[in-house]
Structure formats: structure tokens, C-alpha cells
Amino acid sequence: MSDANLLREAATKVRETALALGDCRGPWYVLNRDQSPYPQSIGNIGVPYAVASTHTSPTSPPAIADHIALWHPGVALAVADWLEQHAAEHDARECEREVCAALKTARALLGEDPR
Image (cartoon, rainbow, N blue to C red):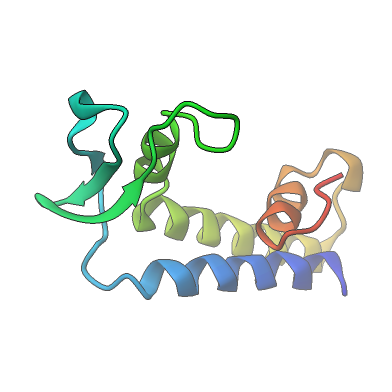
């Protein structure tokens, strides 16, 4: 697969998952933060719809709710746009693969080694 197609595939994946959330556009925020170590809810317009564990362990640190809230659909759609714009640049010319942040992002999003 060409680098440009890899970028487009990642952009499509990000856009599809973000748009599948419907009206939950964001920004998102963390609810019931002061009730740790209980699960925290991620809210959008006052309606909780996702829960993140705040138990302190290597697999679920308390900051996971903050990270989920940060990556709301508005952010995801902006990243998808950036990946598609970069794919157009790859169509015109190849950038240096070792330092291409867009390719590293696309690979990580697709579950590949970001190198």
C-alpha cells in the first residue's frame, strides 16, 4: 500500500468512528472526578455516555478519562482532515518517511508499528 493510501485509510477510520457518535460532538469533559477510585463518566452537554476506570494500575491509570475526553469527535475529525491533506502532498511528492509525523500517526491509528 502506498503511503498516501495508508494516510487515507487512517483518515477514513478516524472519520467513520467519529461520525458514528452522532450528536456527541464535544468538547467532552470528565464527570464525578472527585469520586475516585470509582469509574468516571465522560460527559457531553451534561449527559454521561462513556465510563473510564480510575483505578490506579498499569493498565488503567486515572488519567485515562482525561485522555478519552480530550479525543472527542471534533479532535478526531480535525486529525482526519490533516491526514487527508497530507495524503494529497504524498500524491505530489514523497516526504521523508523517517520523520513523517502523519505517517507515524496513521500507522498507530491502524494498529501498525509507527516506526
